[in-house]
Length: 145
Image 1: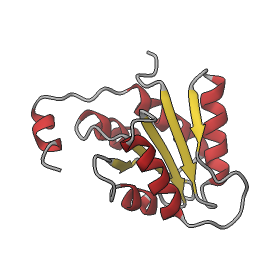
Image 2 (image 1 turned 90 degrees about the vertical axis):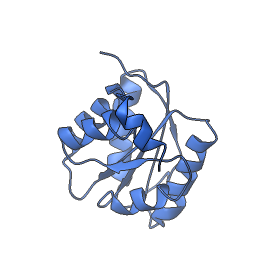
Image 3 (image 1 turned 30 degrees about the horizontal axis):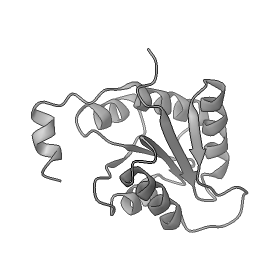
Image 4 (image 1 turned 45 degrees about the vertical axis):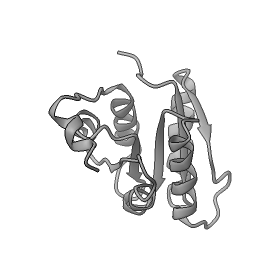
């Protein structure tokens, strides 16, 4: 099974920086086009700035899907979800990841670098990028958001 999306963007805060770099390199090695929105070095930054930057890129259709990484994943999700048409989901296991795509048509996966192991995070990103939205009864609900 190949990835469903061609243009992926990624960002983090300082807590998620190392995991962001790991995910980015993993996807590059799988020949995925990924656009890094920063930060580009390990230094303290404010997660809402990066979440909103990435969410706006999706809203403007410059990327198909996004990956956000912070300490817990929650701050990034809250911030990104303030932007219209963004559905950022904190994913912590395969079931939450699969359902975020199948039922919620999430367009951003957020991960907690302090809570999710690197190997699991890589599996979750791949699953997120390979899982289709089921549509049907779920589409009616998505339109209400």
